[in-house]
Amino acid sequence: MKYTTLKIIYTNFWSHPVRSLGLVILTAIASATLLSGVIFSKSLDAGFEQLSSRMGADLLIVPFGSEAKNQSVLLQGDLSHKTLPREVLDFTRKLPGVSAASPQFYFTTLSASCCDKKVNIIGFDPKTDFTIKPWIRRTYKKDFVPGSVIVGNDINIEEGGFIKFFGKEFIVVGTLEPLGNKLDQAVFADVETIEILRKSAAEVGYNFISEGEPSAILANLEKDADFEKISQTIHEHFDNLHVIPRKNMFDSVIATAGSFKIAVWIISGFFLLIVIAVVYIAFSVSTNERKREFATLLVIGATRKKLTNIVLGESLIASGSGAFAGTLFGTVAIISFRFLIQENLQIPFSLPNASTILLTIVGALFIPAIAGIGASYHIARKVGNIDVYTALKEDA
Amino acid sequence: MILNGNNITKQYIRRGEKFNAVNNADFFAWSGDFTVIFGESGSGKSTLLNALAGVTAPTSGNIEIDGQPLFKLNDEDLARLRNERIGYIPQNAASLSAFTVAENITLTSTLYNKKIDKEHIKALLNKLGIAHLANEHPQNLSGGELRRVAIARALANKPDLIIADEPTSNLDEENSRKVYSLFARLARTGVAVVIATHDKNAFGYSNRIYHMKSGALVPDIGEYGNL
Image: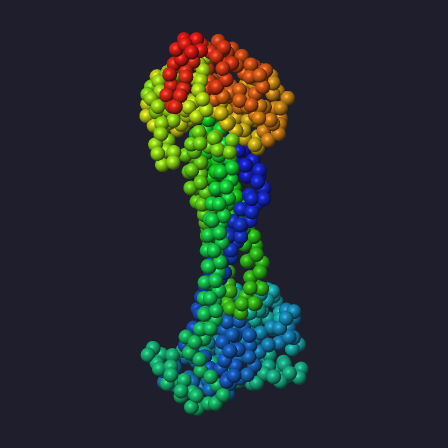
């Protein structure tokens, strides 16, 4: 595009600063909404994907009254400190239709050297575990040694460093991949380490950890096993516990997340429509005011295509700069506030991978920009087909 | 340079009915001609000039410059021809408000990234009495000053055909005389000048007069005594 055309575009853009900046801001909002909407959606998907790949149990047995808490430990790492009788584990393992059962131990301590806030400790049995171990194996391949722990991604202690609980130091042997929930701030240990920790707590006067009593039992069922029958059998033998099937574990959270996603898409679509409408109206008004200028340009030798390009160029500046600003703002905002979002939403939230983010950024840059240019295209074509005689006669 | 138009008709629709703003007009002008098209307001002069200037295609008929049919050219070639060979001053020509007077006048050159003939522009501004306004913006100018800016812009590229629609509207007698004299001098250098006006003072500078009435163009045969 020639210098004069660019100058015409630039000067026209700034000749109505309020209108122009209004268009920029509106497109920026559309871009930011679109970007954050898509990343938000993808983050929920990624959070659930990581969670479900980790949470490969068909049923969960928890103490009665701590169902919600124990569901949320899976989702958010909020721990319940109620425990199950030890016999439940052995009983469940022996039930026909149960292929595997493994205990988990949850407790929380404020007495840690790493963190300002409470630290959740999750214990598991490496010999029988089938939910936590596969996830840990992604980053830590060695055997579990008593006295060692693996920390969540948000705990800033490097491998080989120490974390102190109840006056006893535990060596950190690995850091897990981020999950996007409070489990990123948890410490994972095998049953032998949990026993060391229990003894250390007892030595300094904390006896809140019951020896060998699991907080939850996760079980896998054989193919064609009858969940209802298994659940009924467990309930017949033990009081004060609850058996939750896998399909129910995330129901409420998935429903909440789904509603959030729908709302986000509606808002994004709404802003895109507003951009299209406002750009159309603004350019319609602006080109109408400048009909005589366009006619004069045509008279002195501008091609009709150039007139069209001038309008599209102005639209590109408004939509393009708005989309750029919105995308930048949206990216910074969602990265900066992701912890706040996951804390407040109480649902798994994990940023998608870099290529998805990059693709979303490109989409947020181009979709509102193209919508803006598309909205002005009809006006630009009208300007390109201007009738000089009529245009010069009007408003003269 | 030969400007030749045959059977030019331009049809518009007004209140749902077709009417011919220009009806079967034949027109020609050679290099060095100073042609005046005389007629009342609404007689079709502006429509005819728009067609002759290659801005509005006629509904039927043919317009040629040196044998080249204007409206058979593509958008780009026709635009370049308007830029390089035709200096058209429409009746209500506007100036680009974001540009200064000097920038508006040199637009004809900058539009195609051509070198600006500064001496020529300076001389034009002086002849038209607007040299002191070079750095002003159009919105600060009077109607007469704007008219002279439009004239200067049309002449900036040294066209070999000047078409002017009421070039002296908004001008006082002295400035009108300056404009006519300038056109007459250009005609003497071989430029074809065509103006539409109802100002009879133009006749004294012309060597050809057309009379236009209700869309019909007829060569003047003596009412004003030029032919």
